[in-house]
View 1 (cartoon, rainbow, N blue to C red):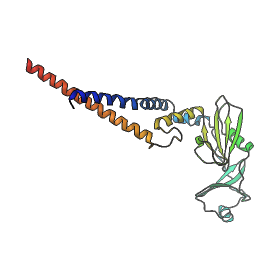
View 2 (cartoon, rainbow, N blue to C red; view 1 turned 135 degrees about the horizontal axis):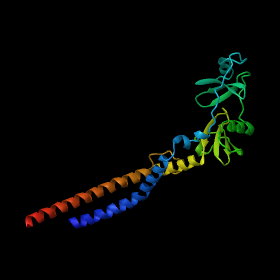
View 3 (cartoon, helix red, strand yellow; view 1 turned 90 degrees about the horizontal axis):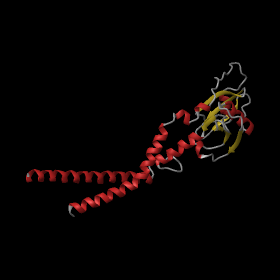
View 4 (spheres, one colour; view 1 turned 180 degrees about the vertical axis):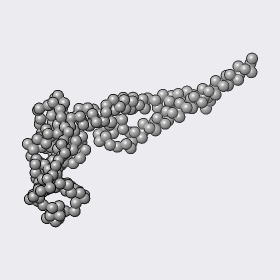
Length: 243
């Protein structure tokens, strides 16, 4: 294969490899730029969370000791925390496979939160300007944006300052806040890592394929530069020898 044919074939390969990665390269640049424009706390909706006063648990509460809760329900806890909820003392017990809440006075296990209580918790944790809410319960399979399993209540606040507060139906805690900005950021993240469904997989065949094309794009471009430099040096030597 002479140099002219080699040069022409390399240019064609370089062009096709460039087309193969060009679109995704543009998406990488656009999504990467977008993700640098906003502070991560704003993306997570931290500015919409109301500051909570420290909970004070009185020493003279008439409550069961932790060992009573553990023995009564045959628990193997990894952690056990006493806290106040709606002025009622509760124990939050976390084991390997679940988290449960027990009434600290009676030892009874708490049932799943109802809509009114979940909404009350969300409103008390909300620092925005909206006064309209709707609540949706998810027993097992929660929305992907929540990032956890149910049961959970999603309390949606309308505009202005629209947001979704996810309240754990077992522990009565606000586990996540999702806004329109978070969803856009999440979409851009999916474009960036080429996982358009779960936004978690860094090792998909899509990204591996584009990465390989980028390497071949570099190699063909490098080869073209080498051929161009060799031709330039040869013409220069011929010019000098002719002179």
